Image 1: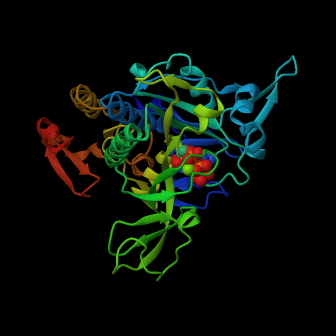
Image 2: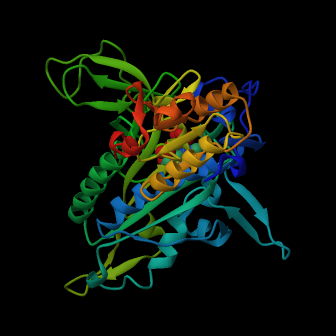
Image 3: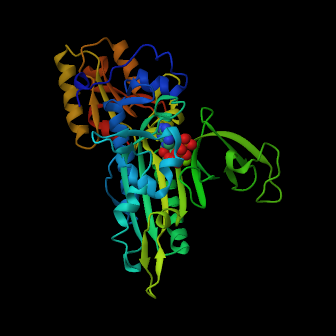
Length: 414
Ligand code: ATP
Ligand code: MG
């Protein structure tokens, strides 16, 4: 991709309302643009990174026999009356009317729709288990939209729903998806901690959250300094120095976290209220047992930036990086330099996503933008080209060295 044609409007100054590192950086690097409070446009660099996050999610879920569908954002009131949530949900639910004065909402989550979609099909135990997910835009009229993508009023979520004959099968799948989440977040370059949580608006009997430990997180986590115990403080009520409820020797510590994922054992809450029953082996009418598993994609993108960047420079994890190699000719008006840059670009682009800075700008501007955007590997074509050398930077190690043009690809690692 030619940088001259990339829409990445970098800024000298972060917007005034940006008070966390990731928000400042994402605005300055030309990744996001605010459209209204809590509503953002994902510019091409962010869209590319998010595509990579989505690819990881799809790979991990598809290989575990989950299949992707896409449900509508616009949902009729009737379904929400069936579950009882039209009355329960409160002002976070975006409600609207159609031209015939019928009530609708913009989906904040999709338990009602997925139950309606599957309930006729799942009429016998032979149709179970079943696992369906979507990647879709959600709407919640949050009281305090904050930190750009961290708490938006419109955001992108992956939501998976599983259906089972009984609690035992749900437990098996719940563990399997929990492992899938752990793998996904690792691949995204995120360190997460799993903590028990309240079931909140979604309901059900048991839930766990995936937390990215960070000072800017809105949740407080109580965790044990000795064993694996961890819980959202809202749920556990445990504070610093309390004894651990799980092991004998541990003491509770507190830390802030960003909730990037939340998984729930719903049980039969929706199947009973919305009449989703199947016939078991003995022909008994039985409510379908359900699980649901959310992962906030846009919030995860922001957490990736928060956890993987310096104050003025992004360092993208390999699998999420919008581009992998940045080729930067310093003098675009020198024919030889440009020819070399084009040839390097062509070769590397067969294997990697490469961005070439073909803009007629001063080196200072090119370097500043390159630091902001933070592509993992950088090749600068400058004065040493006459000796067949270019400057190669590995942004993970910070190492910068002169390498032979013919040997560049040996220095790039997957
Ligand atoms: P929170 O407690 O942060 O408001 P929640 O528990 O209401 O979130 P869930 O219903 O569990 O959210 O949604 C699943 C995932 O969607 C969350 O783990 C989070 O990653 C993401 N998410 C939820 N609300 C938002 C939002 N307003 N903006 C961006 N992402 C969100
Ligand atoms: Mg949650």
